[in-house]
Length: 490
Ligand code: SF4
Image (cartoon, rainbow, N blue to C red; front, top):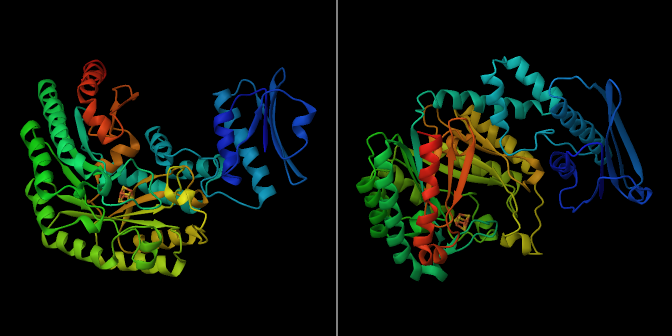
C-alpha cells in the first residue's frame, strides 16, 4: 500500500487511520506526485490551498476499486491546521471503510487515551449533548463507545475530587514471573531462569527506595498511592516482599496514603503467607488475574495455573479481608469462544470483586504468540467485550479507566470497571496523566507531570541484571527527577 501526501504532512495521524483497516502492512510513503505511485493500492491525501478556501480530498484504491471524498474549508478557519487534519482523517476513514467493508468503533480517535479528550471537553464547559455530537459527527465514534467513554470521564471526575497538587504516587517494579505467558511482551524474567538475581535485586531495590524516600522527605511531596507491578510481585518469597514493603514504610511517610496495591497476578505464586505479609505491611488492594475461567484456554496461552488455583487465591484474599480485589480478563485469547468468555464473565461477576479489568488481546511483536505459526485467533472479541460491558453495567460496575493499545483485536479497548467508590486511583493517574508517578526498580519509568501539564519521563534500566550492575550510574541519572520536581512541580 502506498500513501501519497500532497500539501500536508499529517502522516502520523493519517497512517494510523489507514492501519485501522489494513493493520499489518508497511506503507510506502511519498510527499511528491509521480505516475508510478498510482499503479497499485494507494491512498492519495491532498490539501490544495486556494486564495480563500482549501480543497481537501482523499482518493483511495484497493484491488482496483476506487473511492474519493472531497471537502472545502475556509483558510481563515480557527485552528486551520488541526481542522484540516481532522477533516482529511474523516475523508480517509470513509473511503477506507467503504472499500474494505470494515468499520472501527472508535472512528478516527486513534490515540490510546480517548477519555482524555472527553475530560478536556468537559473542562471547556461542553454539555453532554455537545460532547456526544462532536465524538459522533467529527470523530465518527460509535454510540456505545461514546457512552462508555463519557461514563468513564464522569466516574474519574468524582474519584479525582480530592486530588492534591503536591501529591505523587510510587510504582515499584518486580519484573519476575514464574514462567512467561504466550501473549506477554512485558520485560518479565521468568523465575526459572533468573531466580539467582532476586536476592540482589531486592537489596538494590531497597537501596533505591531509601535514596528516593530521603529526597522526598526533604521537599514536602505527599505520597498518595503505591502500586507494586511487574511482572508478578508475588514471584518474590514472603520474606522478600516483607523486606521491600518494610523499606517503603521506613523511608516514606505513609500518613497521606490513600491506596496501596500489590499485584498478585499469577495464582501459582499466591500463598497465605505472602498475602498476610502484603496485608500486614499496609497494602489494601490486590490484583489476582485469571484472564479466563477456562482451563483449556489457560493451557493454550501457556499460563501455568488452573482456574481452581485462581479461585483458591481469590478466596484467600477475601479471607484476609483486602479492601479491594481486582481481576483481569482478556477477550480474544486463542482457542477461546464467545460462549466460554461469557461464562468467564459470569463466573467472575459471581465472585463479586470490587474491580474487573476487561482487556482485549493485543499481540505485540515481542510476544511468543506472534512468533508461533500454530496460533489462529478466530473469535469475535467485539462480541465478548460487548457482553462483558453489558453484564458488568447490569451488575453495578462503572467504567473508570479506559485505554487502547496498538495491535488490539478489532481496534477495541481495555476498560477498568469498578464498584462505586472502589476505583483504583493509581490506574486513573497512569492513564490520564494527572499525577506524577515516581517509579523504582528495573523496567520502571518515572512520569512527572509539571504544573503546566507538560510531561517528563525518566527510565530506569530495563533488565534486572543491568539494573543491578549499573545501579550507581542509574541513581546519578535519576537526579534529573529532583531537578525537574524542584523547577516544575513544587
Ligand atoms: S504473569 Fe503477566 S507479566 Fe508475567 S508473563 Fe504472564 S502476562 Fe506477562
